[in-house]
Image 1 (tube, rainbow, N blue to C red):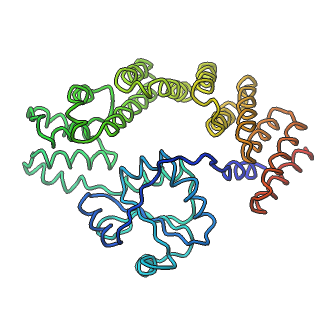
Image 2 (image 1 turned 30 degrees about the vertical axis):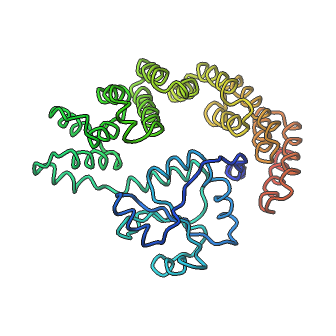
Image 3 (image 1 turned 45 degrees about the horizontal axis):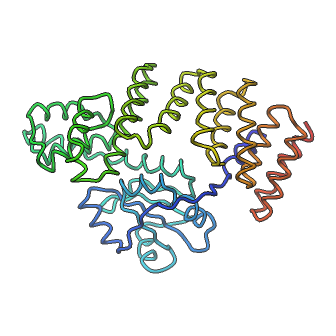
Length: 389
């Protein structure tokens, strides 16, 4: 039963396709290698086949997602290769493929960093990208030069970037470089400020704000805003780690002041994250209710996500589960797709409302008429298990 529910949640489809997703490189494989080597980036390769169902689903629901596009366009050279024609046939000789899709992460020298088989949904795909980035650590090669006395702006910038990409602290190098009083009229030093800004509760964040116009001029408003958001998110992580509400407040205030367009949504989301991490049920439910009303209203995917989070963390709390039920009901009503009704059915079943759960599951089965037989059989099994219990 538990396996069944996990599976059914996993097959829930993302129905709202975002407009801005991955920008795939249209050059040759060799050109992609050259570009990756010059930019010190990893190449992501979607090794697909045209007849492959999971490949089509990723192309339709994952690659066009805005969050996926933002992350992969910033960190990778992205390439799609059909393994049964054109360059894909040549690629396959060096990088064998036995299942579709196979997702490759390859460095500029042509070495495989990470290789996985099978499709991923949005969150899992982004996590896969983060895993690939963590496997490439160029910081040692820069550390050797830095320790030998090369403290040039170009070397320091690359060193800090490599440390950050590898998940290592760059604070020591950043502080040492700031002591030299670098010239912030130079483009490389402005890029250094951007790269060095990892948390909002820091001196370097204040420097980014001070030189914001100049940094925007050599990068873009979008890139600077995303760094502000990322830094504030990291400060919330520190707030959770140290159970420090003052850090949470600082992050929210800095978002309100320096990235007001996203501040309201950020505050509600991070209130939920903080309360969830500290197991503050009542405060979490209050924040969740506000977020559902102000930010997630009309978005079935967001509403369902809130309901599932409550189910995962507060299943024993009756008040919480009633809120989850209402959220799931609204998601099903708005979304009108089998996955949303299935989530609603599961929560109804958990809340002891078996007859209503069966009705919701039957609606899910009706909406899944065009899905694979495996999916329909799983839903039918779910219904039988409720009726037998």
